[in-house]
Length: 136
Image: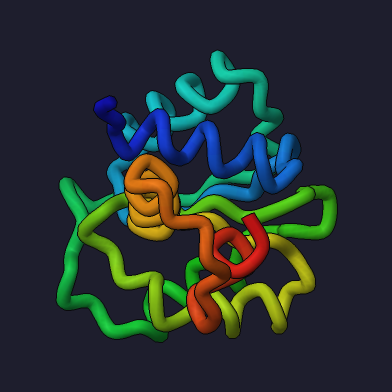
């Protein structure tokens, strides 16, 4: 069985019960528009979306750039936060973000790992990488 990051994200958001999203990513405005469209076509409500207006992800950006991006997004009306881009540091921040904002946080890499583990038949709770890997 195969998967993609996009399908893993949709499945992860659904299983976590997140339907109203605040979204952050490093992408350009045109890519952010496509991301919003993709999420809405998959029955999610995007209540706030913000990008860094970069051409692509920057795997070497400091973690505080990611944290500050999420901090700048209004998350009050959202069920959860989605951080898109597989070349954007998030793993080290997932627990911190969930604690600081009181919301479930799903990232592209986290959702992909979660889906791959499930496809491999592994359903053990994994701590330290957000509620998705711990609870679902």
